[in-house]
Image 1 (cartoon, rainbow, N blue to C red):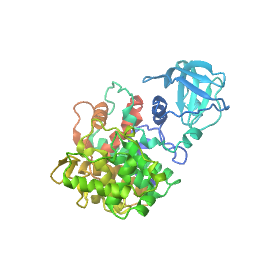
Image 2 (image 1 turned 90 degrees about the vertical axis):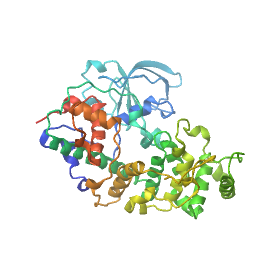
Image 3 (image 1 turned 180 degrees about the vertical axis):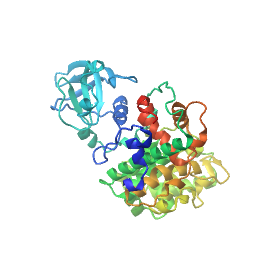
Length: 440
């Protein structure tokens, strides 16, 4: 896998610029960050129930704690209840992937951690004297709806440290080289996650889930992924022979299929909805019982052209092109004429418009197709020819934090450099590790 991303080692190991980077956790163990677990713990919708301590005592969460964005324990002033008698214990809470993280990070002799009572870990292991250890792996494994991939790390609290632009004086060529090596590291880590996931599912099914999640954008990413697991690609392809039939299955299972015609609909819309219903109602009752509902979706503030009912038509077309999309990424924006290329919503026609725009397709190429190909053994990735995604606030903020307000955007014109800034944001900026960046 490292052969696919030869420059990533420079970012990981520091390279000629003596830049220190935290070593990545091997994918065979846990291909995510501690921040994923922090976000899970902070979100009551994601935080699992039925937790137990390493010793088998039941755990009830009265207060998960206040997320500490500064140095010290991850959460302060947590209150947890233990056992049948629900013993109430309060204190600070620290999160690690492995129990050994407590010693490796030097917390034992740090006075800021003197009030820590709870140790939340992903993997079960040796307990730390004086701490109540709560492992998550077994509990999360029993929830088929949960996926760390659904956690958007930027949607949770973080603080941007005020620094002195640690790489201000670096030569522009060196900035580009380092950013692109960080970009390769980001893609390498995505590849590790995909390879990890392929240990439990077919590659084509993984690709289907990732494409579906991308069509959900930020607000409905998890719901689209859930839909892809409820209607696996193989089953969809066995039930549907055309994209319209696939769309009927997806829309029916989404719970967004209108139950009754609207008087404002034109004749074409009525005919289209009738055809969708004609196919959906024939499905088994057991299948229909798996349908989601409108409460599962975030629909407020969504542009009509980005609405899930339109994006599901794109998914219906993709279902018949996997894995050809990997070798022909232009097809991400190419669709045969269908109802949604001429309608914005059920009530309004429009000029023919793409179901998926170029910028979204570029994101899917870089973040899905390339790492999927690498995870399945391809070495012909053409990383220097990746399509460029639009800049965003994270890219701009990280560049400003590293290089100062007068830096030239030319240093992150390439797709790899922009990916690199996102990687650095997660490694150094929101973790307050800027002091580890040093020029030679």
